[in-house]
Image 1: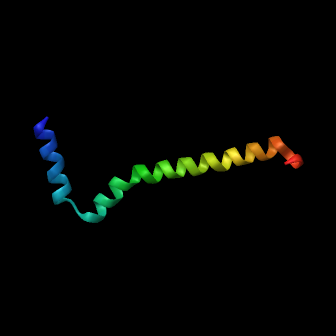
Image 2: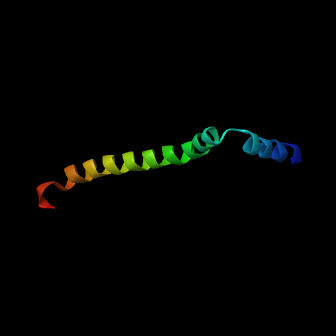
Image 3: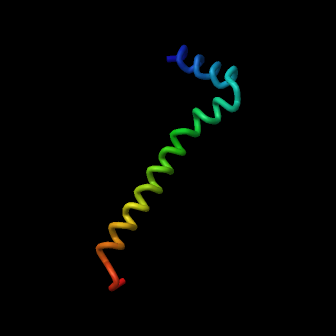
Length: 54
């Protein structure tokens, strides 16, 4: 287990900053995109369900 942790530290220390920034922020960006897509689809369904009575 210590070997794997040491390997991760070397990657963070030796890799380029731009590549690290993209690879570490990609999961957060995908999560925000999925959340935004869910909100848009939910708004469409609620808008159709309630109709002009809202």
